[in-house]
Image (cartoon, rainbow, N blue to C red):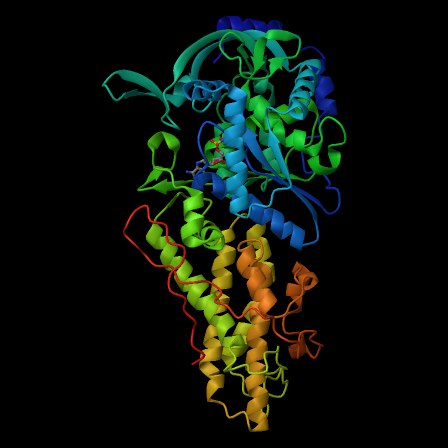
Length: 591
Ligand code: MSP
């Protein structure tokens, strides 16, 4: 909110012709051509005032899945994450811990790194806002905004939420009572207490960008995904967009980057934090390769900062806008957002110990629906992993590779006479209509999975894979190869064909699952004898080439030596605090 003084400063500010000049410079409106093959995905950078929890890991695993998927497609993909270390709440958290801010930040930042590594988050860049390279990027960005006429000195008076580090308009604030019954004001969105703030500081001409932001969003319906959030941003742009305070007085906030040329002011933590994405891309030098290919993954609580402030800053700086802002909802516990302040956080390391890294990743991506919040429940993790990973996927692998059914331990041959291309009236053909439906579904699976990965609907991709795995198990069950008499040639050929088709299905599932459960996918593919260079997305497009009369490079190849169980069944247990790594191993019986 601007005071009359702020408004008069706005009118009398140093705007002049620089607005025009920056608009000419601005490449932000409309999609930009991307450097071929480059892809750059980011997570939000995480506040270091609290330890990492499963909600944080969810943001990171989603971005990791996009990165791994793009790498499989053959892109040169870069994946950045890191920590957001400046601001009042970090300053206060360090003070409360009796530590100097930098040592405090270093400690918590290393915990994030460790947790991400343990969860298979394969970032290529880790950025901290306390690094020199980042300070240089922020200083440069600030100077560009000033030179382009979008920053002026003014006076801000209004509500401020320190936990959200956010300025709020009167309509975003509501009344509440605190724990001792006092009347307080809170943010309507986050529920955090707000305070009245009055300061002389620098303001950004956000109000100038309302029309351009609307134009950008309307012209790029996939700029913010899922669609629901795209609408929400457009809707919020129906309201006035006041100018934004982008600095705090140094006397109130010391833990931050000083405003270039004015050491009495500190750069607003969100401006500082958002620039991290540019820092990683190499800004201000040589950032264009990555910057034209950037995609952000963010939680819905920080949508305004990414879909309004950030594009406006970029337009003002004459830089391209993000290709996509992927938004996800939250993990709740008994309906309440998982957060340190509510004391209901789930520790990701404990989860990986109990459910394994792949179990945790599978659960988060299979159950996490971006449009709506999801409730975390241990029973759900156990049930899901047991039915889809241990029984269904593990059972399929075991059936195809068990020595009782596959004594030669090879990828058997396909027999076109047993499984002819045409389903009707072919003498010797033994496949039935459900089998043809399965082959069709698995051939179409890579395109379906790709489309869903690219719209952050990992749960839909996994639902489709899981449906196909069920079909493949049904295929084996229906034809019961263990009942065939392999001393008869025709039965032998059909037996091998059943195994060949099932292994081909598994090979496709293994390739497609790599971005989600890299460990399990590796176990499947290694057991099938698929070499590391045969695991790209293109290799998933050659499903059952023998069915179309082509060659199959895997036929007669020896299976890999690892005969272990793919995923041990998990057990529910009531006792708290006793970590239990695995449950009882089960091998699905070949009959
Ligand atoms: N520091 C800012 C982001 C700056 S990016 C320029 C911030 N940090 S955060 O640590 O609070 O949140 C980081 C990410 O974790 C956000 O995407 C947020 O939505 C996500 N999550 C935090 N709690 C969450 C859940 N309970 N569930 C799912 N994601 C959640 O915001």
